[in-house]
Image (cartoon, rainbow, N blue to C red; front, side, top):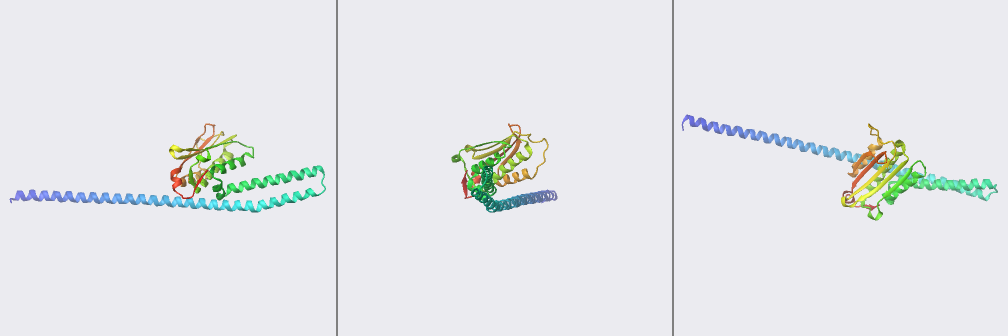
Length: 274
C-alpha cells in the first residue's frame, strides 16, 4: 500500500473515530439531560404530593376542630338552654299576672327556637353530620339558617336528588365548605341583597356544577387573594375540581366549581348521593 493510500485510510478511520466520539458525547448529553428532566419532574411530583398531603392534613384538623366545637354546642350549650326552658316553664305553676304569663310563654318559645337553631348550626359545623345529610340537604339547611337573619333574599336551585351522582363522602364535605366560604364572602364583602346557590349535574359530561352568585358590588378590578379564597382553592385542588371566580349576571360575583364525578366516585369506596 502506498503512502498516499495509508494516509487516506488513516484519515477515514480517524474521521470515523471522531464521529463516533461525537455521537457518544451527544448521547451522553442527551441521556444526562433526560435523566435530569426526569429527576426534575419527579421532584415536582413529590413536592405536589407533599403540598397535597399538607393541605389535606390541615383541612382534616380544621374539620376535627369544627366537629369538637359542634359537639360542645350541641351537648353543653344545648343542655344549658334546655335547663333555662324548664326553669321558665316551672314559673307557669306560679301565680303570675296575665302580662307575666305572656312574658314567660314568649321567653320559653324563644329559648326553644334558639335551641333548635343551635342544633342546626352544630350539625352544619360537623363534617360527619354534613356527610349524613348530603350536600343538597346540608346546603338547604345552611341557607335556611341564613334566611332567618332577613339580611339577604336567598334562592336555592338543585337537581333532583335521584339524579344526584355518587361522590365520595370527603367530596361532599369539601364542596359544602367551599359553598360556606363563598356564602360568607357574600355576607362580609358583597353588600348584596340577593344570594343564589345552584347545584346541577351534567350527566353527559359526568360533571357536577355548583355556583354561588350575588347581586352585590362584584369583584374589584384588582383584588387580593385572602384566606377565604385561598381555602376554597385548596379544597378544589384536593378534589381535582375546577374553581372559577368572575362576574355574575346578577351584577355581583359568581363562584363556580366543576367536579368530575367519575373521578371522585371511583376515588373512594364510601360513596354518597345528594
